[in-house]
Image (cartoon, rainbow, N blue to C red; front, side, top):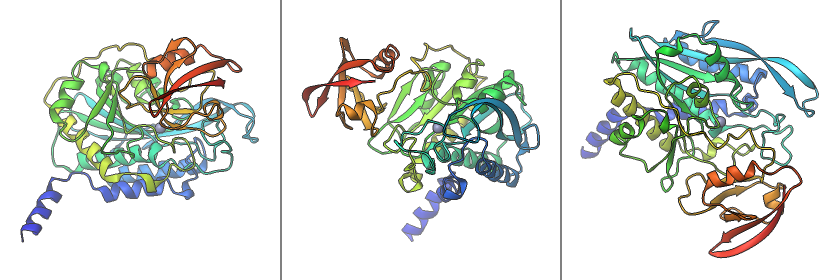
Length: 402
Ligand SMILES: [Zn+2]
């Protein structure tokens, strides 16, 4: 009897259904969806799935054609994609659903649903990516599942909040935040009436002994204190920058306070092995619960004030060279700890391994990831550098060629 009571009590408190989160990730990251490359038939299938979910919840369509927001973009096709060499115009498709609470202002919750498809776009970390399905379970079926289930919660909770909700899933993120940028340039809802934006990109790999990352907390003075008020679950690492490697950037650049929730880098990042078997659904559900609590924490407050943040050091698109490493964004010690090393890239060729901590490159001390990114911008292809690193407390040195 006691067990029955506690079971029914806990299910009552649960506002996110993990099985549904799993169902969305499972479909979106299945081989049938072909890795959801931007402007592919498989991506269109994913869009149709999301639109069907929004329709089932009776969200209002907020695209240009029902739930769809189609946009054209020019794409500098790479040689591997033999069907499209040179500058081509392609069409992408965002999917938007709206909850009208009859209020003046709106909360935006978004996630990109495109990924790397069959590895044609040069964003893969696999040494031979062409033709392999990049399922993108964490990146970013996890975020899309989050948007769908948050939409379900806010549309079925029987509460009329003090803000409306706009749920958006973006195409073209992996090619450079194209879908979110296009919408912000030509929006279907006035930008001046958006209170704030929450972006979910890679929220499927939460590990209890690691921190949850929240980027963009410098975009409003009110973020951190309000997150701290409702967070009882996570150790959180905050980053203030409004500009980051995902779609919150497009909103930040329009002076809208914007956050990015992120469970961190891993060895399967941008590889065909980013599969559903490695997703922590219970962890994701807890993140979504935190977001619900945050939305309510802010619901009785006026529209958030916007702040410009320090300039982000860089985004993932801006480097001329790469070491081929996955930084450990959550590492708190001195130096840059490697979460992973890609095969056949400069770091691997120089003998660096996951777990190594880079503390110096040439004459420059590397205290954190910002130091590293700043320095990386100064190298070009063919340059050599000496890397000093720690491996199990031993100080070692190696030569790398970019
Ligand atoms: Zn992503």
